[in-house]
Length: 215
Ligand code: ADE
Image (cartoon, rainbow, N blue to C red; front, side, top):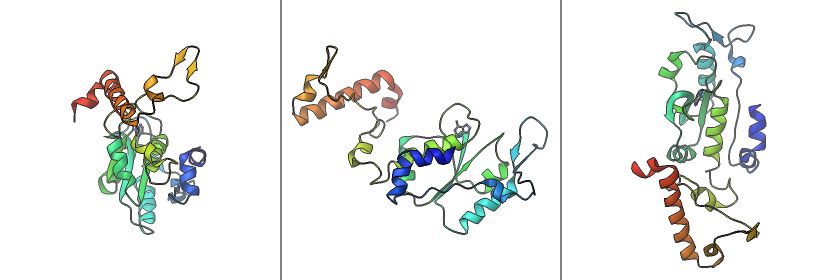
């Protein structure tokens, strides 16, 4: 399922251009048991399963013996909230390992001794970390120079300058009587830039006022 996402999205373009390599590892390959199990009942009781320390440690250390990782990221709802500045930082790194939590989570010793960064993609609980890893990968990989066709477009994203993006229009100039704002047709680039900035500011204060407060 995840490989489909990675083969279809912007990530596949980046892979084809040789700008990024994405390798998925199946924890079952590192299992110590004949049946390939990677989880067990939690000590102290309770519902759900916990991912075992040994296969995870084997996997992480096996990968570390092949290359140096800048970060070992664990996806969890109690991690640091993913943000554009964090994506920018991660896009400058060479090698990232993303460990997807599952079931009830991983044995805490993995988080204590191997994980260097914990990321949440929002205040809700997913059934597994794979979707979170896909979200992180997409948001980070698209920032790598050359991945997007138009170099400018990642820079003008919502959040990149701590404002949400202004409205955009394309042809036709009129549809059912709904017209594109005249300023965008004026050809006056300075005025257009000013208008876009004002729109961004207005939208940010209406839709995401907290973004203007913490700067
Ligand atoms: N795993 C489960 N829920 C998650 C979330 N909100 N963010 C990251 N990983 C998760």
